[in-house]
Length: 190
Image (cartoon, rainbow, N blue to C red; front, side, top):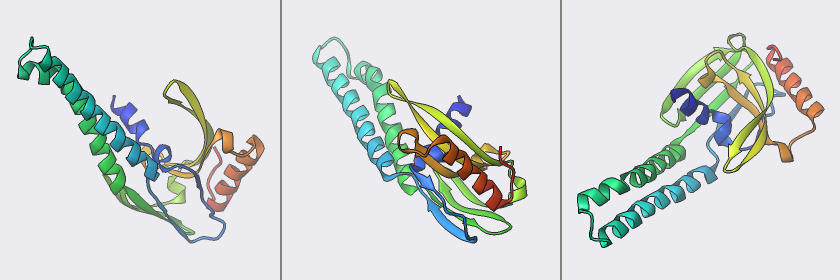
C-alpha cells in the first residue's frame, strides 16, 4: 500500500508538461504541481463531503436510525472528502527549485509532506531513463512520455521531460531527446 501511494506521488505525475532546456548550465527551474490538480481535488473533496451530508440526511429522514448510526454510515464519504481537501492543501503548498550546475543538481523546497534540501552529483544518479508510461484515468488508459534523471532512491528522481503521448514527439525524437539529456549531464542513457 505504501508503495502504491509513493508511486501516486511521483513528481512527474503532478507537474504537467515539462521540457527542460539544459543546453547551457547552470539552469534553475521551479517545479510545482499543475494548478488544475489542486482545484480538482477541492471539488472532489467537497463532493465527498456533500455525499456524506446527503447520506446522513437521507438516513436520518427514514427515522429508522439514530444520529450516531447515520453519521457512522456516512463517515467513509466524509473521510474521503477530508482527505482530498488535505491533499489539495498540500498540493497548493508544494513546489521545489532545481538548480542544475556542471557538477550536480541541488533540490530545495517541499513536495507534498516531504521537505527537500539536498545536492547530488550527476554520478550519484543511475542515468537518464526514457519510457512511455500508461496511467489509468477513470475508465481508460492515458499514455505519457517521461524522461527522468533516475536516482537509486526513487523519490530523488527528477523529471526532465513529461508529455501526453497524443501531443508528444515521435518515438525517434523522444529517444534523441533522452540521449541529449544524458550527454549534457554526462550520465548513462538507460
